[in-house]
Length: 547
Image (cartoon, rainbow, N blue to C red):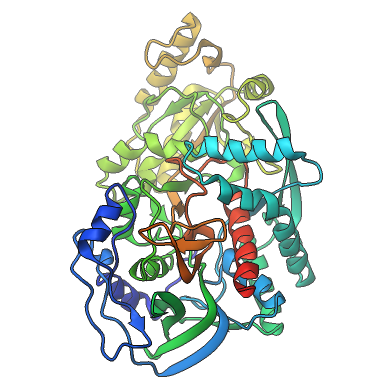
């Protein structure tokens, strides 16, 4: 993916180094009590003052309040961020009759991904809907705020139907993928808008929708990052942004500011603090710098407790075989019980390999799945018994063995694996003898039906013999998102250290928290992250416009 830089990259990063208010973590409330609230720009301020000193990383130290503005603009609603959640908030606020400004730190709408999930309210009864909410909570280690998951469950169909229709009217067709999720004895009907077939994928739809919203009266300001929030008393009443010339512009919001600024996945300091196990994985983009989240914290909002859920992706759908065959690491050696096969969790086995490369080369997280020619014979029975653990699909896209590495003999396969790693500049230290020895050792264990090396279930001990032999390039090494934002209530209103709503401040999408909670992003409901982002923006824009 092309990395996007703007003229504000340096100034935003410098700005972050003067940051914040203590976030809600293991000792957050005590921290807030001890350090006091930071100063932010207010109507009554006559000069900027520094925040009280705080311990911890630099982004938790608030900068001096900005009080001089080259220009002031007034709206009902100000949306910070022009991704899927921000565009959805703009739409419903505008539809409700509000005047709306949307500010963005880069030069246009920006989203990533290919799918957006929603729950079918007609096909599902109340038990299925509640079972789906419970499933998400289970997959989040029971750390979800159930009310927030209910927001997605009850509103996603309306929100995602609007998105698909709006995109189609602007020339970007959606292909809907249908799925059934079994859980607690219920068959839960799901759908997802997919954009694998479109150049630009989901972002193509976002660009098209933004054009429509602009024509309908929403005002968009690109290359205009939010650097602070503006308060009158205890209420947030606007966003302070800088334009390309470096001028401070106050966007006043009579009803509320909606932070739709995404996560902090391109801010290394914030990653190290809130999600340290993302170290060494490569970022998707440079513009998710966390500045909007910091502005929210400086205004009194609290952050979701750590550790935040990480979304780490890797191999494309065509090669993503998630089945428990033999896995070989960057040295050509077996390294795990392969029963954990899903892409979203494989990063947890890769950290020691990233450390071997001083966390400077994310391809050290790559590995190979060694697969027999009759691999497909096992899928249906394995999948039926463990429906959340194995997959050969990404939406309707099935794996394609023509995209895999192959060899008529194990020795030829080893040669081709080495050539593939060298061609793709993977950080691997492979030799043919080690690869062959690892496969032979595995076959010996399979013949006994007992895994003396890692204790894998005997049913999954399938010998690698009877060519052609396959090696599937695997490994999750890219970080598109971190799912842990500001604490919000069911109206997406940000909460302060006392867990009371902050007047005028809201957060949606990945800028908001408590929807996910596990260590890793669960991929069982494909497109859930984007579906949640569209839905929360959709619900929040309408709510704020009603105030």
